Length: 256
Image (cartoon, rainbow, N blue to C red; front, side):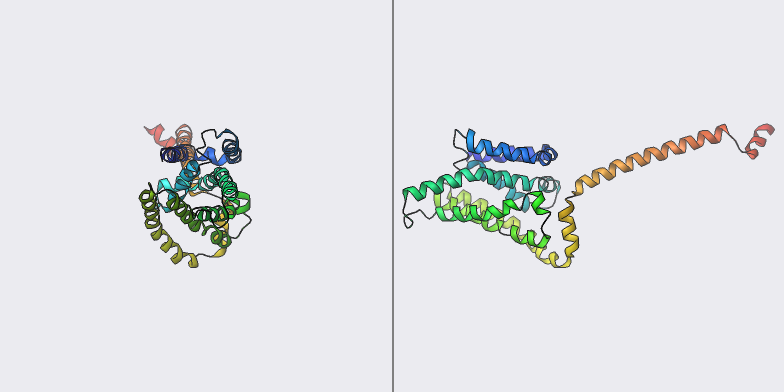
């Protein structure tokens, strides 16, 4: 569990401090994650599933958090984290698939195997549609329908863990129940509002891939620049007025 917590800490910290860099260098990070997962994983912390589980915890709870600066920050890298998590999940999934099929007959395979397989299969289309260029080609409603299956994927992960690890049974159960409780209000709001939002608006929001925080930051910069320009204009006008007085002011100065 220490590896899981360390993974959560690393990815949370990276999301808070380097979200822009993660989005900019996402393809390089995918390649790097693949190299680590397939080549450098000497301690088997990835092939045993600890690291991908930690990453998926961050992705899960990002969606479950109430609206705020933390959720906004992590929403910008949530897709990238999900893709990295799946890349690191593959050695674990494929390794144990080959092991179970080699060591057990179809009817002797432990029950924990089946939720793991279902979770992996569910995450394949979710991962593919998380790539930006794929996401932009889809209608928002279609994309949303696909990604609702994430709840099934997360549920299968926890069922997989609950059937494997009796020592941490209540801990895993507690994490999952906490996630469900946090997710319920957001799901209720979504189902109430989704029918009121026009399809064109939703599709535009998805395709343009513009983030509110970036726009607010740009707007703030523009307002600051405009204020500076207005101040300079006012100063220059005053200087011109002082240097070139009108006839009326000129007469007043002569009389004085």
